[in-house]
Length: 172
Image (cartoon, rainbow, N blue to C red; front, side, top):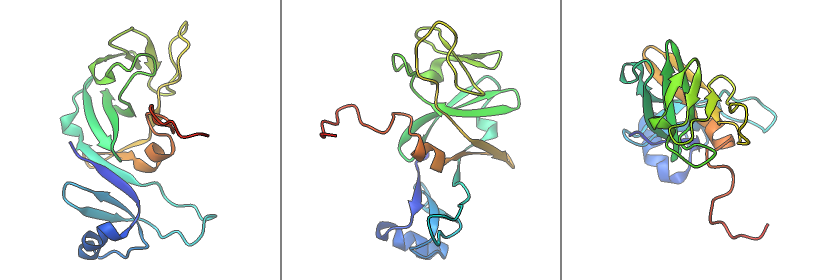
């Protein structure tokens, strides 16, 4: 399993960044298994638009039609799923009872939860009628040259487990 971290370079990655020819102020994606870095545009100020940080998490050949693959992005558990030529990335656990969605199945563009059989639209994330659940969190995917990449910035903005941790007793 590959762990991917994105963000502004910090001192703990300085050695890896020098090897890759990057400065500590560059916005980078660091893939921890081989310590490679991908240069992204610098952020001169907060009003400038920055291209998303897509990180390669698998090869398309690892993902058969109708299959699932568990991946980690910034230590967040996600699932890749393939339905024909389309590849989707979404949160690993069901918003209802936290079932492992990598054990589900795909039917007619919908992900079927293995525990309670509710289904989620893979294009929009909406749950099937009759269920009062949060929508499935979906993340942008790119497939280029046989490599499957997920937008790590989107994962960070909308983490699969939400913004708060389960046992966070910090007063708000």
